[in-house]
Image (cartoon, rainbow, N blue to C red; front, side, top):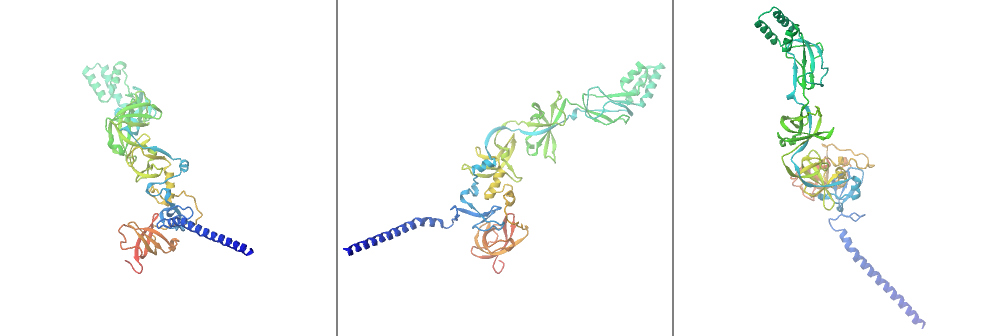
Length: 516
């Protein structure tokens, strides 16, 4: 009986051990079956995954030199820091970049919609009021004399019509007047008196002075020169006691009832302006007051300093509200209205070589677009090409977006400058200063050709001590698409390169052991 119980206990222990073994084998098989596809997918050829985040990596780069790409992580050859990955889900490539909405708010980014609107063909300009030179009068002396008293004290003094300007003493007038009085007292016939009057007129003695001889019987040697019009003494060329000669200009009188407005038209709009176009001008002193006129003439020549064409018109200033030298805002009206594609003027970034607008795609990505700007219409700018009606553009914060994009190496540089200049405001690191090589210095090493394209050759090269580069794989640009046509992948070559901006350009590629 006792033997049977021992046998039964041993059989149960054996069965339990067998069941545990079968369960272990089944569990191990299921775990392997579950993990095999993930492992296979992670190790698929051509995919580079970040071991920490399991995100697909496009390439590695140095944020301080984002245009240089590396196919594996490591230490940056430019700065004392590790290369950083650029992920596929960051919105890289030609489709633009995606910026976090919170960051957009911090950057103060505003958007505007491109719209098409009927606007007049006219344009805005600036103008300056000037004296109407066609209405200026001059006060001259016809005889030799001396300034006995000067009534006008200084230029730009207002003066009324008939007001005295200067009293002139003329010694040469005394003799002919005394002669006339002597002939009159001697009862000479009228022919002699008329000849004496003609002589005085030839000496520029005014008729009033000649008439006064008959009534007063006294010779006059002083004459008062007066203003012929109401206006301003724009020029005063004499002082008290000065001697004047015949034909000398004593003063110049400019009228104020009519003024010239000289409009400065940008050179780009020179072909759009014609005589007869209506002008509406205002000045900052009273924006509600409008002065209207029509362009009378276009002055020849372009100013070499302001690159503007000058158009001149006449303004009515009978109320004397305007004075010469006022800067006025001018609207030159066109003949008809035309449809224009408009964006806010602040949305257009002009670099000198091109004009760029940052467009927001439907998926929220931002990308730069080259545009051709036209005329300004108030606070908006006409776009001739590059945009479509209804698109959304960035109206503010473009340069901050450009800096953010440069750190991700996505958007092209708007200024065409080096990436190191573009990210000059990036956070400082504890790296030791790196000496920047000159443009003419060259470097050489050897390496295996990994890939050849029309624009570059990729090498797995040896260290470059002159640049403190370790052995790595990187791409070098070719000086021309047809350069080094005999270089094939898999060959080991000796090559020479130089720095060109943020890029490194090959100058010589030859097989090991001799030049090709």
